[in-house]
Length: 259
Image (cartoon, rainbow, N blue to C red; front, side):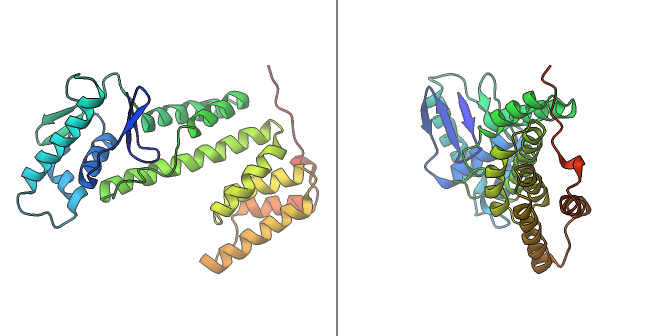
């Protein structure tokens, strides 16, 4: 069985996807999944579901929501033992032999980063591609998040952006600047102040014999940063712009060995 949080919350068993219909049950299940293997206190669950103003008898409501979540999981696991365990001061979700897509993503992320650091760019590009393919949208799109879920969601979303940056760098090292330039055109529009994507886009365009377009990307980034934050681009991006202006031979592709 697969628990999916990289997109809408879903529980997938033998090709059938299920989601709790009640919003508060979705919050509870999502919270347990994002703390998988750890006990989540009843107090933390209350804060996640109701914020700082839980209703009277919130403890009883939590018990009901846990019961609904257990019924959903038992229905998908065909009578196997409860995944949600009562353990003071709250509950924990035991993964067992099941899979959680965010955990699989984090393992692939670590593997890809190690391959990249070892200059194994073919392997790194493939690993990051598989990791990014696990995403079906923003984290928990069908869950109304409280403070704990927001923190963990921000961390996962940032890891996704870093994985994209590292995959782009690996592909640039492999001479895939034509393919990368198309992807980076969208990424720079989606993230207009993420300087790494702009620097990669500039380099990809330059290596594609599109120097003028590369310089326009720099000007667009500089204008955005000035208007939004009153800042100049970071030093590496400024140095890249100067290197493009000078047609610095160090910007030319150094082919990566295949052996």
